[in-house]
Length: 97
Image 1 (cartoon, rainbow, N blue to C red):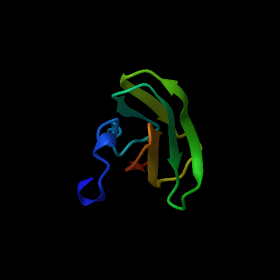
Image 2 (image 1 turned 120 degrees about the vertical axis):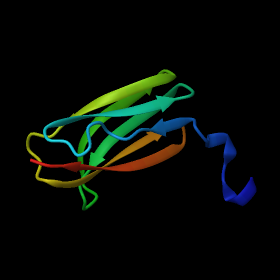
Image 3 (image 1 turned 45 degrees about the vertical axis):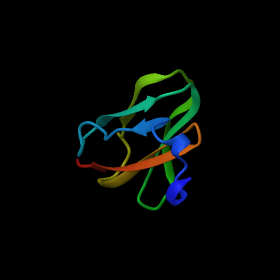
Image 4 (image 1 turned 45 degrees about the horizontal axis):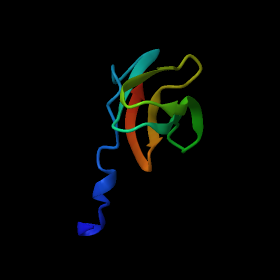
């Protein structure tokens, strides 16, 4: 492994940017799986508290997305995290009311 990177894990799972961002009430979070995998996609607040689990199941390869609805949340920055096939990827999104 060059530079400590496990090249076998690259692109097994890829997390896309939520659309729209910033968002008002709901947003779509896209992700891609190269191989079948158990997937957890969750949303966290700025303090690291889990506020929603959008996906928590085995998924087949291909393009996927999950809808995040936020009727009870405050304005601010939130993070969403994908765990799949040994890959963990996190991105930021902003809720504006």
